[in-house]
Image 1 (cartoon, rainbow, N blue to C red):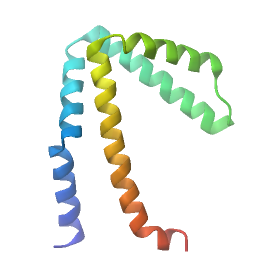
Image 2: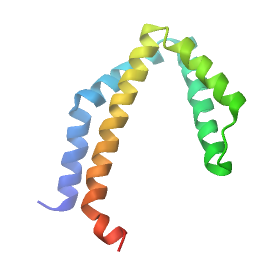
Image 3: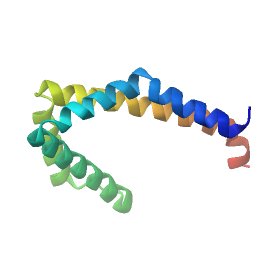
Image 4: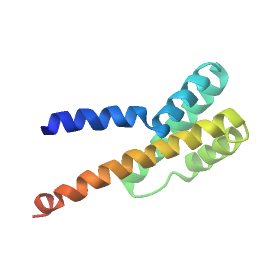
Length: 112
């Protein structure tokens, strides 16, 4: 088996994983509720913007961070949004773990 076959098999297994399936289903449910979808989009934009500011300046935009936390607190009161964020977190952990495994396998040439 060559490396591309292995990568395609990994991609297929990720799509079959419980984490992927749950996240996909949660996204589909969110897409049915335009108001909730818009609130989540707004939160994700705020979260992204605060991360960019911190990466660029080394400092947090406290006002934007506070607004994002307040919106998140409001969102997780909704059971559908809470399930979405839980599924997103579990999926992101899966992908981070896979990336870590791959990174560990090539660290000798990256650092050398």
